[in-house]
Image (tube, rainbow, N blue to C red):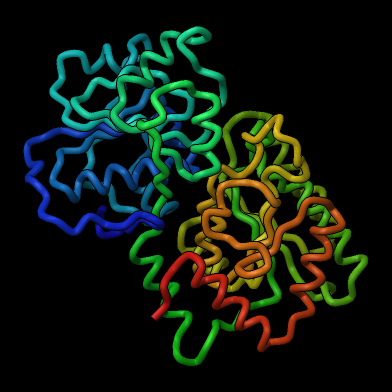
Length: 381
């Protein structure tokens, strides 16, 4: 992997690798300018392939983001990677029909383009529809053209296996990575003096998007305000919500609804949209609690796609000692053990009780909990 991107949960290959110089790799993503966790993972693939010696291109049917924007939001330098716009009226395989591509990574949600490379990797963030040779023969054929179908969590892999009726031997789980710079920062704040000193701050990070994969910021604001009314220990706590905003009207209106709900808290709730990586990192370092709402409060198995597919923002927060409070379903449980490295809830009352419990912890218990949370995702020195 690229030096900035060691992978969580994957044993590194330490043997001698062949040379990939003068070989081309293409990573495809249709939604680059949404700047979500999926896009960060897409860039990680590109950097890893670049580090292996490939000539790397990131291809898209959508808009191409500026390198400055990628640097500001993700703190990533993609100067060595080329970007390419695919014609709107062409499929990926048509566009690259005459190209020599050694490795092709399809990293776009619900893209069913046929692999145009010698080796194809299909990165699945979550499977949306049932794909079989009977229901969607063209999609099934496209998926079968890939050597590997890499899910971002065992939660995602489970539903990909159930919904996509393709050769089960193709599936694996490959968690999105944390950067070395991020890991080094996490290690520094857990120094010999003990766990980091944190503010009475609850953090939430996620794109403001009211569609299927809604992070439920509005619900969390309402629950935090309710908990402050009920529990004295929360009166001097603050709730900070950070995230990018989709360009569509519904997303902008959803952000405004969240801001209106925040006004009820009289300054205890703050919302900041489209912040830099440095601002996010500073907030993660200050916060005692990380509150996540994707999937809440649906325990049925009818819409698992509403749950958090992996939860890179949760894992980042954990690495910096933020105690996670998350809905009791989703991909983050590859790392989070309820009661040991975080708390879970299934109802509004349980969510409020989690916040009450954490706000009342003394410094010694808080420090022990913080370190246990961080060590669940990173080995600390």
